[in-house]
Image (cartoon, rainbow, N blue to C red; front, top):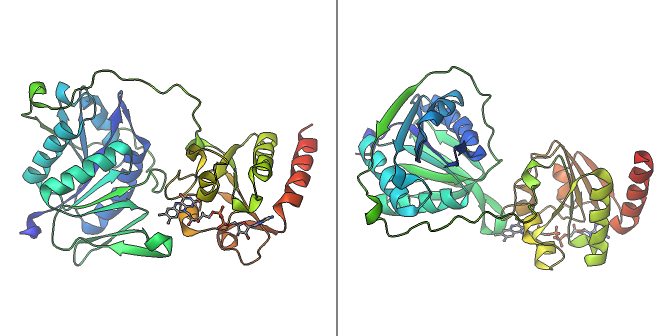
Amino acid sequence: MNEEYRGVWVFIEETDGEIAGVSLELLGAGRNLANKLEVPLAGVLLGDGVKSLCSIVIEYGADEVYVIDDPVLKHYRTEPFMTGVNMLCQKYKPEIFLYGATPNGKDLASAVATDLSTGLTADTTMLDVDVEKRLLEASRPAFGGNIMATILCKKHKPQMATVRPKVMKALTREKGRTGKIIEESISLKEEEVRTKVLKIVRDVGKKVNLAEAHIIVAGGKGLGDEKGFQLIHELANVLGGTVGASRDVVEAGWISHDYQVGQTGETVTPKLYFAIGISGAIQHVVGMKNSEMIIAINKDPNAPIFDVATYGIVGDALEILPKLIELFRNTRN
Ligand code: FAD
């Protein structure tokens, strides 16, 4: 029965007419899987007034787009989105279905998996496929990050995974690329939906945009205390960079979770990443290992952070940092 399932699908997340970056990244990853399996890659787009976005989905690598355009889908809510996606899955039977590991993506994927009685691998960091067995190989850190586990869903379809933003790479947009658009409708009416969006309140507070930062100066428990961590702020300041932190620093209350890099924080890809007094636990490394250049400072020459560092300085950060700050400050003036 599972043989009738064919094709790789990507859920396209949209807000206010804009496609989420992670959806485009997943089209890149999905293209690779679809090519290996020799099946089409499809985007699944639900929303209100979203038809015009189909061409963008195709230009980023999809062969097909399944679109449901209906006012009931104006704002994300579990019930109507799950109803629409499940209907599409039951009708067209994809073998693989990928979602961004965003709040909405995670919510939808878990609701869909439960309703379709299939499996879901959350927070995947690597995707591949066993072509012969047609099995998705979804890898993610497990057991506290001590091992990478490759998770298979052998008995149920579609095989589903959520993938964190900034882990996969989007393809270059191919303007004018053509594909098939399959329009479907949803039978659910607004009065049947149990949740209502009463008001949208936009968070206008100061946002830390780690994901877009070109330079990140990240500090860990090796800084000793909040006063030591202040040196991270100073170095970031003279370099025009953004502060980042390990989870232990966040848990110690030296800085808020908005600044945390890693598995349960942000995934970042800056041009330059300083890892200072950070040991290099796998949960931290998965969030920063794709940075263009990594400079690590650690007093332990065997610290795992040196395995991913481009340049390493072995020494006491509390002595090295004031000198670096001084040096960059003088260079700038
Ligand atoms: P430590 O491991 O204590 O390392 C401190 C380092 O500083 C050491 O290498 C030491 O040699 C060095 N050092 C000490 N003094 C100095 C000095 N004076 N100068 C220079 N170097 C010095 N962690 C994250 O960061 N991000 C995550 O998203 C995350 N998610 C997690 C999710 C799960 C499910 C779990 C189980 C863990 C997660 N962790 C995460 C925690 C992770 O496992 C580590 O505990 C954490 O990254 C360690 O933080 P650290 O490197 O700052 O501290």
